[in-house]
Image (cartoon, rainbow, N blue to C red; front, top):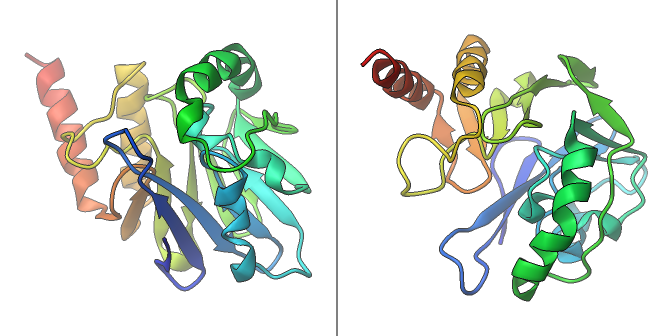
Length: 216
């Protein structure tokens, strides 16, 4: 269920019963903090990472976007900082009750609606991590660059496993810019929320598919 995917990064994967997709959440063990990337379908997602954390360091949480499978477990810990991209809090407030009513059968542990205390709208440094607004799949998309381990976490801006090159898009033009930014970072490994890790070469294929379709 949990595996180490690089020197300092752990991935938790679960396959909820009754749906076709799986969900990955991540823990990055930084010198300054234990950094959780998304909180999954309930408190169990965070709790399962705790044996891999340094109990002497603060816990921080970064949301990649507001969708239910990325936010439900945030009540499992008291976080020193919770970061998301604008307009995360508004979107979460508008969506939470509806999503819980529809998907509550697949929750893991306790579900809590926890808003971000830090909202960004531009490139932001957080210790060794660089956070970038990454709209496309959603308006509030956020991606996390970790140069030390040469990887980029893109959340749902990578397609679900077996579902083609691109995810469901809210804003195609914004997504093209997000992919162009991801390419410019020249990372080795891409991590997504519903797929295996991938080589950064897939970004060129994504961009080509989008721009060639746009030019038709």
